[in-house]
Image (tube, rainbow, N blue to C red):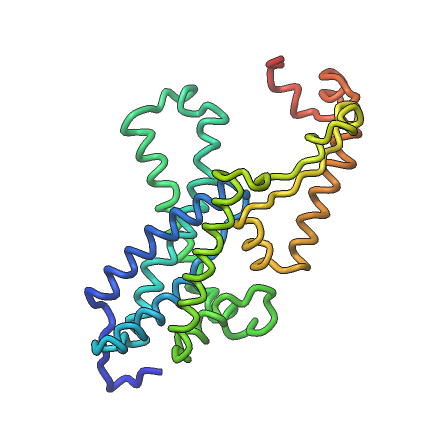
Length: 273
């Protein structure tokens, strides 16, 4: 795309500032979604669309359009948001759940650096391990992976001509999602989560069998389901049905001692209740 003898802008104030802004925004979005839904998101595709959309907006305003290398630099700075968010929300709660901070007497500055260094080192290791595998996953496995995010991002940055309109679609989607959740939570027009445990007629069945069907109705669930697709969403739903309608009803009649016999690992932990 860029011949060796051609010099184009790459690391510029524009790319650094926009990359940091996107990193902050999508770190908050990815962290919120991971904590609420339990599923992380990759941020490269929406960020690449916004980067190309910003380039088109600058061109219409009479400014210089961003080069493809500037957009790649924006992507390099901002896409670590999903990595850091995932490494933090899926790892750091373990410190408090297992009470490692209390048992190891870690607090204050030491605890902060533990929380800070884990995602930092994870991101560095991720980049280092990604380098030797990039050729295999990007070239040799092209068209074979179920989530070809790198291919989609590449096409967005290369074509770029429709980026402005696609960026508008993202803005519209954000507004629709915000209004949808506003009608759900603050306005109480409908419940944010539907659960069969709230149905009075089957309350006795729910208490006896412990089989509960729940469905998240927030915009984040709808959007994540659309991104994942029917096939992989069906696999996740099948796992939920197996847990709530098979495994939990089978275990619910058992007392603590019987569970200990099933799970040998429980013998090493003291009974809390």
